[in-house]
Length: 437
Image (cartoon, rainbow, N blue to C red):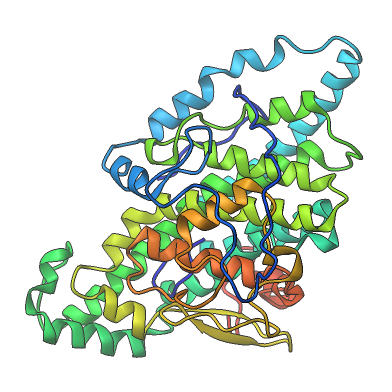
């Protein structure tokens, strides 16, 4: 989730509802700490530098090493096509005809939605595209809540709504006043800062640096939406109306992800995340449901932040990263009163409703959720140390993001509409609505 004023390659069009891979196994129950608000959680044996090979989460050291390898849109598209012919083979026989008819209808519905998402991603104007992306994330967020249940908490699209809205401020250069002053200060203190950017250096280098950052945000905003939004639409079209799990349908849905780690261009994290959303759909225990949704959110968050690393690193040149993180980066979130409040990315998160996390997430039973938190969160049972020091660092971002996701998971105001009804009507028609955006 690109949560900053200076954040947020199309990978491939998800043209079918499926493609082959093995579903993840069910986690075993982990021990709960009896004093979640005062002591550290009981940690599964995993650090940022070590983990079980069976876990879809990549350790910090493995991830950072793998990021040096290249991946391309073409290779991902080829991977998506490699198992296409297998999606109609080897299926269970009972009720096969009805299953295929239902699948065909759902595929047709998804195709229409995929075309709409592609149309948004292909919008040339950066501002118009960002507004449509933000609104579409909000629509997907509400749709997911309807499927997962009102008690499920925020899903990844919920957070993406506000991250994309925040990114829009930088894309439109509405925060140029503050950022311009900081950019100029950075240039004055570091005369050679321009060498880190593909822009010419002169008296206007500060403004040029910020313009470059704005373009990187727009690019990242589009990249993440183009890859992840189709899977949310695919999930909705595949499982909406289901009253119980269907292993056959889940298997086909899982075939729609490119195999492999995120650093190698794969989508194993996304596959695991949506499998967790699927489990949460039919989970009756509120604790388990919220843990599954929180885990899925974090998995998509890690996938997203890894994909965004080139844009974020380029937007924040060496020598300015700590300054930018401390002084100019924040996320505006609903304040529960119909307005917005700014959450600085460089400061520790405040306790929400007087607590570090909602009751269901104060202690984590889910082993995968434990591994994720203990692997990336510097203080797994506390908000102390949650503030980022360098937003160009994946570990710094994930440390902040997981604490944010966990602490405000059950905040109902996050489902607040990002724009008014009249603004929504105009922006989805490709217009720039008047008024605050």
